[in-house]
Image (cartoon, rainbow, N blue to C red):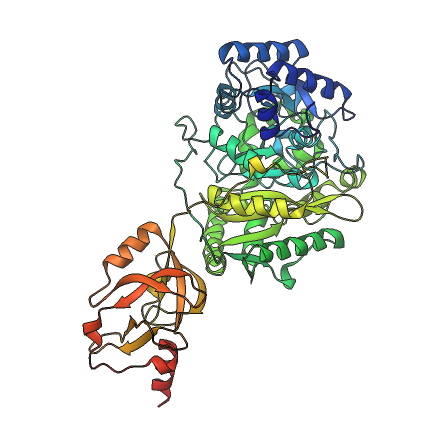
Length: 601
C-alpha cells in the first residue's frame, strides 16, 4: 500500500520490497479516477499508455531502482513539451503536438521517471493564482473555495493530492513557489539557466526557470540534479558555478516592520514569525534588512518594460487570435504594445541601480527568509478582482529571477482556518545546493507534513545533510578585525563574520615591532592562566582562503587556536623569536582594546 503522498524514498522502498512500476501506475490510475478536482490535468496520459510505459521501463531496466528515478510518476506543466502529448499553454487554439521531449523531460524520462500527464496553468504562464484557464481552476487541496496558486496550478495540486511524486512547473514571478505554499509543498526554484528551457514556451524568456514541486527538499534536489545541465540549444542556459554559504554563523535576513505587508492576514504573518523563530533555533543569526530595493525591482516585472517579453513570446499568435486569450491575460500582454526601446533600456538601467542597492543588503545577510505569499484568496474573490489580488501574491517573489537568485519554498505550517502558509529561502545565484540543508531543516521543524497529509512524517532518507560548502574558518586577532585596516582583505574576498569570541586562557599577545599597519603577535604558553584574548572567526571561500594565507608575511603564520569553549580553529600565530623584547599587551584582553587605549592616551 502506497502512502497518501508519493515521495521518492517511500516509492524506492516499496520497489525494493517487490512492488513494480506497473503496480504503482495502477495506483496512480485509480487515484486519478477518484480525484474530485476536474481541473488538474489538461491532457492526462491515457490509462493503457501509462501501463505500456511502465512495462517498457521494466523491460529496459528490470532491476528495481536501477535508474535514478526508476518508476517515479511525474506530471508536466502544459507549457513544457512532452513528445506525443499536445502542448497548449492553456489556450486550445494555440495547441501543437511536439515530436520531441523538452530537454528536461527527456532527461527525467531517461532516468526512469514516468510521465502521467500535462497539467493546467494560468494561460501562457501569466498569473500567480491558477484561475486564468479555459480548462477550469484547480483548487487548494485544503479548501476547494480557495485558489491553488499559479501559474503552475495543476502541477502543484497533482503532487499535493498524491497523484505524482513530483511535477515540473515554470517560474517567472513566483509560479514555482506560490502554488507550493498554498498546497503544503516544496518548490525548487533554481538559479536562472541552471535547468535548460529548451522545449518550454516562454513567458519572459530572459528570466524564466523550469521548477520542481516535490514532497520534500531532498526529493526536489535529487530531481533537480537529474534535470540540470548546460544545453547549447537554449541561449539562456548556463554552466553551473556552485557557490557556497558559511558552514556556521549563517546570517538570515528578515523583513523589518516597515516592509511587512500581509494585507491583513494575521495568520500568515504569525506563520512567518514562527519560521523566523525556527531559523533562530537552528543556530542562525537573524538580521533585519531593507526589502525596499528588492520590492522596487519586483515591480519592474509587471509595471516595467519586462511585460514586453510576454508579448514577444506570443506576438504572432496574438495578432490573429486575440479572441482566444483569457481576457485578463490578453489585457496584461497587450499592455506591452505601447512599450518602447527607450523604456526597455531605462528599465534595464533601473534594475542595475536597484541591484547595486541590494548589494548593500547582501553584505548584511547570507540568506533571505521571506513569506512565499502574504495571503491567499478564494476563487470567487480572485475572479472579481483578478489584477489587484494577483499582484499581491507576488510581493515577495517577483524580484528573485530579475536579480538572478536561487530559491527554495517550503511549508511553514497552518493557520487556524486550516490553510497552509509558506516561506522561501533565497540566496545569490548558484547557491542551490548550499540552500538545501537550511530549507530541509526549516521544513522538518515546521511539522506540517507533506501535501494534503498534514500528519505525514518527512522520511529520514530524504534528509539533506549539511555538507562541506567550501568555506574555511579562520580566527583573526589584530589588523584583520572588523573596523581594522586590513579587514577588507577578508570582506572583499567573500568572507563572512561567523562570531566574536575569546581564546582559551593560555595565550599571550605582543605588539610586533616595525609593522605597518601595526600588528600583534599571538603566542600560546601552556600553563599561562589568563582570561583569553578576543578574536573574530571568519569564514572564507576555500580558494580565497588559500590566496589569503599565501600573502601572510613572516613572522606570522596560520596554526590551530584553542577557543574558550574548547573547540579549535585555524588562526593567526606568531614565531616566538619575533616577540623577544616586544611590548606585551595580554592584559588588555585583545588588540581592539589596546588600540582604543592607545588612541585615548
